[in-house]
Image (cartoon, rainbow, N blue to C red):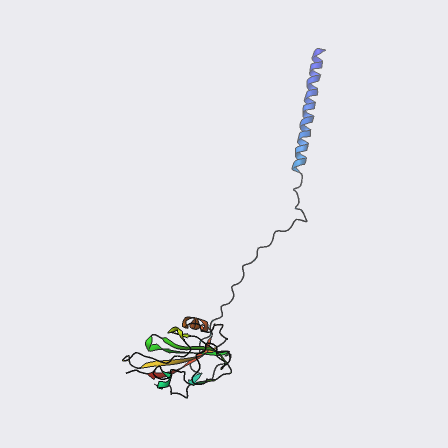
Length: 223
């Protein structure tokens, strides 16, 4: 009788153990079949990458026309002697100038007079001359801001701050003939340049804005 009880107990334990293993296996299977968590429908979507900005096209500066526009003077002939009154040996004032055939699109004019025989020593810079203007009278005053032509301004010479406006040629004695060169620039804008600007600033300001340019040369020598 005792042996039957022991056998029955072992059978019961075996059945209980088998049932527990089945339960544990069912739970594990159920967990493995759990679908993955879906993203929150209200969560913000990641921002799309911003494509790099396309580089702006480079607009080339205009190539100055050096053949059309003409610069002349009633005070002297191109390539001839510059009268003494326009030099430091005379009154040292500016000569009369006139021009024609400026290109379409001209907004303003500027003028520089320099001496290429003296490493480009500059005797005059003037800018802000309206596009409607086609001449300058002789003896322009040395004011930094001019009333005639209205809106025009003058800068410093290579002599520095003590000599703004036009200062006539003064070559060293015995240095030979100097070719004083008046260059007229037709510009595509009004220069934003302060009155009394130096030569370096003047040259920088007109850079890339010259539609056309032309020259008039007067010769002078001190013996």
